[in-house]
Length: 192
Image: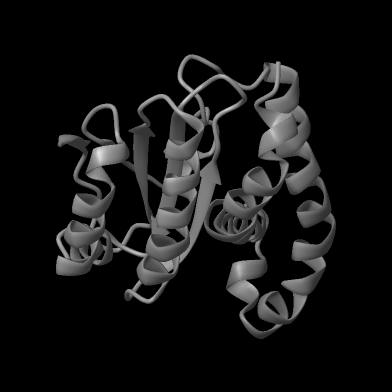
C-alpha cells in the first residue's frame, strides 16, 4: 500500500484520499461500483466520519478518486486499520490494476487539490468560488455578532471586533461551507 500521510494535529479535520486504478474492462467498473455500494455505508458508520466524495473516471479512463472526511486523525486511523476495511480491500484487490495509493490531507490544504492527477482549477474559478462564499458571510456574520459585542464590550473595540468576525467567517468557511461547496461544484470547478 502506498501511504504518504502527514501527521496533522489530533483534533483537525482530515481527508483520507484514496486512488484506485482498475484493470481494463467494463465489468471491472461494475464490480467496483458494487463494491463502493458496500464500503461507503460501512465507513459512514465509523466514529468521526464526516462524508465521502467519489470522483469517477471519465470515459476511457480507469482511475477512481475517493475522498473520505474524518473529524480527526484518530478517527481516520480507526477506520483505516479496521478489520472491516481490510476485508473489503481484500475483496476488491483482484479488480485493481495496482495497489491503492493513499494520501492524508488536512483542513484548508485540500480545498483546491484537484480530483484528477495533473489538473488544477483555474485561478479565476478559485477566485470566484472563494468570493461567492466570503461575500455573503461578510454581510451576515458581523450583524449576527452584535449581541456578543454588546455583552462583551471589550470584544467590540476597533480591530478586535473585525478579528473576531474574521475568526468566525474563516471557521465557517474552512470547516463547514467550503468542503461541501467544492464537492457540489466539483464537476464544473475542475473542468478545463
